[in-house]
Structure formats: C-alpha cells, structure tokens
Image (tube, rainbow, N blue to C red; front, side, top):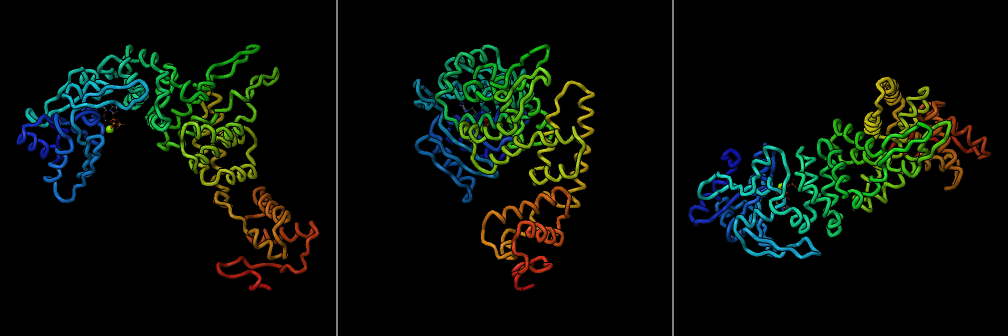
Length: 487
Ligand code: ATP
Ligand code: MG
C-alpha cells in the first residue's frame, strides 16, 4: 500500500511520528481514491493527539514556504505543500443533537474517528507511524471497495439521522464511482429522508452539482427519486414523472426522457451549465400538457414557460442568479428551434434568426438538440439527424457569409439620431428593427451601404425629414464623428 505514499509529506510525517511515538494515519477520501486509482489533491491526516501541533512540526520540516492555516475552533490545521492541501486533525469521537448536523466533539481513538465517517470506503486509514503503509480497516472498507458497495460503518439509521447530508453523499458517490448502495443502507435512506430538512440548500446543491458532473447523472437522480429525497429537494423534477394514455395515445415519461437527454449530453460536454440546461429543457411539460383528439398530446409553449421557471428554480435551489442562469434560460427557451427548423423547409431567413437569437451559444444549443433526440424509432432518429445535418450546414454557410452570431447592426441608434436630427423615441426603434429584420430575412446584406439605402427609404415612408441626411455615408471609424466626415 506504499505506492500512494510517495508524496514527500508522508515521509516527513512518518519521521515525526516515530520520533515522538505518535499514532498518525492518512484517512478518508485520499485512501479511497488511491485504492481506486483516482487522482485527489486533498490529504487528510489524523493523529491520536493534537492535530495543530503535528501540523506545526511538519511545517518546520517542510520549510519556510509552507503555509499553515490554523482553525482553532475546529482543532484543525491546513498546510499547503507541493500542490496538495493537507489537513491535520486529532482523532475524535462525535455525538449529535437532533436538530443539527454539527456534532459535539471530544478526543477519541482512531476507531472512534473511523466510526464517525459516513461509508466504510471512506473510513479506511493507512498508518504513517509504526508499520508504515499498513491499512487499518475495521469495517470491511477494502472488501466494499472491491465489490463496489456503499455501506455505513455503523447502524445506518444513526449515521443518516446524525448527519442527513450523508444520504446525499451516498447517492453522489454511487453516481460518481458507479457503486451500488447496500440494500440495508438504502432502506435507511428511505426511512430517514425527512431528516434532509436540517441540511442547508447550499450543501444540497453542492451534491446535486457533483451528481450532474458525474459520467452518468441519471443514476443519481433515479436514486434520489426512489429514496423519496427528490420530492423534498427538487419537486419540479418529480412532476415530470409518469405517462398518460387517452384513446390509445400515450406520451413519453418526461422524467426518464429528461434524464436520457442529460446522459446523452454528458457524453459530449463537461459543462455543468449545459448539463443543467439538458436537465431542465422540458421542465414545464407537466403544466402545458393537453390532449386533443386530432393531434394527441401537446405541450405547447413549454419552452417559454420553462424559461420563465428557470430563475425560480435557481433561486429555490440556491444556484447563482447570474449569466449562468441566463444561459440556461436561453437554451431552455430555444431548445425546440433547431428541431422545428429541421422539420420544415430550411430557409436562410429562419437559420439567420436562429443564429441571431442563439449568438455564441449556437453550438451548445445544437448539442442540446442532438441530445434531445431520444426516440426509440430508428427511422425517426435517422430522419431527424439527417435534417439536422442540413441545419448545421446552413448555419455554417450563413455564418461565414453574414456573421450573424455576434450581430452588430451596421448603423447604430445613435447614428440614426444624428442622421435625421432625432431625439430618442419610437422612430429610432422602428428604424433599427427594420434594418435588423431586413438583414435576418436576407433582403439586404449585412453591410453599411445597403443598410443606409434602406434606412433612407424607410425614413421617407415614415415621413421623416431626409433632406438634411447625406446621400450616402462612409462607415464611421473610431474616433470620427460621421457628421464631420460628410456634413
Ligand atoms: P469529495 O472530496 O469528493 O467531496 P470525500 O469523501 O473526500 O469526497 P471530503 O469532504 O473531502 O469528502 O471529506 C473527507 C473525508 O471526511 C471523507 O472521505 C469521510 O471520511 C469524511 N467525511 C466528510 N464528510 C463527512 C460527513 N458528512 N459524514 C461523515 N464523514 C464525512
Ligand atoms: Mg476529499
């Protein structure tokens, strides 16, 4: 087991442990990840005694550049050394009150410290003192690692009730590592689900985000659902569940569909926010569902309502209210557009409008739409994918020609005001929209001359005074005022 102890800090700790006759161990996530051959940059050191003292002694040996941060209240110290964050703590025993996940702490043995950990695979310790490198595994953690099982070291009802965040962590580890949750342990999660109420939203969303960043996040969301936790922490997702049949016509289960789309997109991107967009793209389907005898099931406007729901969902889950949220909102809003396009004759105008609305997020939107094709009918999938390819080609052609993606109107509102000596008002808006629409519809090209000619024509139609406007204009250069170039 000495392979994972190559970092120089282990040698230093070991020397101190032998000199001072201390029981010192590396413990928890680092040991688990080392045995699973996963990379980790956090090392947790536990000493039967005083963690802060040990950290200070280690820092003396690692040299001047090592930074030790002491958290007196917690009795811990953190040391940054050679790319790693190394945390030192004295072995502890914990007891809990019912209303808080913050334990009452007292000094304890290594075994006490291992018992307070959430899963057997997280309770493994490796000795750094005598018998350097030997594993201390009182709860069968190595066997569970081998058989890929998550199990609590103690009675699961006590483990989960003491700190209900552990239920979320368990489901997250199952998703991240591809492990099964032991039956007894899972039943206990189901029994203790309501205890999640004492956990802060911030902690919960951290775990949900880790589930979303896993290779196959559907695993986690299904477990959250089966345990009853999902209903408590993210009820909007649970509403997507189920199918309904009228006159032999059924709609698909939108919970399972959303999870499939999410898994699909995870094969293509690591972006957390694109993954969020995949999870939420159909979130408003339950509210917009209608049955018509002719058409069957419809979900008209679910993209609009879905986009509207995004800020509330983000607020409720304590996700950021910033440009990431706006990005998710935009993708939810636009997620049908490429599909609708691919079902119709693909006109240049429609593709330009899509490019204009999606801007730089067009590639992400196309990725979302690709992931959204989950039909079980191979013929349908083939047809969709083919039309999609056509949309992609057109997007590329038009972007090269017209540069719509970062559309800047060739004549700005300020210039329009100067040209016609107008003050801010309705007319400016009408003229700007006329130019934008004409470019997106391909009536004029995205250049200054054609835009100016159209501007004059439209202004005349509107009865504006075009006498004082120059007959033609040079495109403005930075720092120059148009009226000075061509008074
Ligand atoms: P990750 O770093 O991926 O979040 P981890 O298991 O390493 O996973 P850390 O928060 O780094 O989690 O914690 C390190 C160790 O501390 C864990 O492996 C576990 O032994 C213990 N631990 C962390 N949180 C809890 C908890 N809520 N209940 C019990 N033990 C915990
Ligand atoms: Mg860790």
